[in-house]
Length: 233
Ligand code: SF4
Image 1 (cartoon, helix red, strand yellow):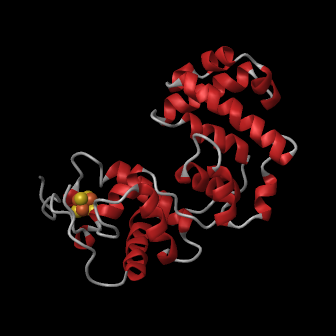
Image 2 (image 1 turned 60 degrees about the horizontal axis):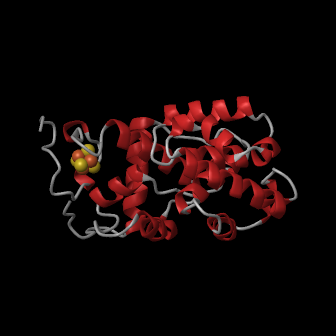
């Protein structure tokens, strides 16, 4: 995928413009309030290399079999593995989950991550990323969804769209994209930008066969593979 280098206006202005167009066309996305951070962390861990439906089925099966996190920790690894089999990579995920729960218990004195709220975004992300299986996307998603932190996690959709719109070059990783966008995000709009890019990536700027003829960001797109405006590819 060849992308032209970032052109035109400064990145902060281009992000602001894209956000405005996304919100006008798809709506303003507002954080819906606190949810349990450990639930989000485990869900995100389960979501690796699978889809939302299988992730949710595995999470439900896990909580049904082990209603308390201490039960997951005390269980034989193969029982945890069996409970989350739907999500795939179940042996690896079960091992990582138990290691993560062990760390949470020893670090936070229980299975509650509320104390993360006492740390800055960068400190909380660094702390979470010290655990195996938790990358910057998982850490940022957890903080944004659970606590409403003003972050824009870079998942596969945000990464792809950032490249196609020329916000970052094609050769850099999602981790570097996150760092590159961070200082230029419209303040207070991380959640709306992330959720809108997710929706846009699922419905219009899809990985394969993007629907460029319906794209309201067409003028901003620098991707050489983009389709014609208002015409089928
Ligand atoms: S023009 Fe096509 S490739 Fe470019 S942002 Fe829009 S949908 Fe994506």
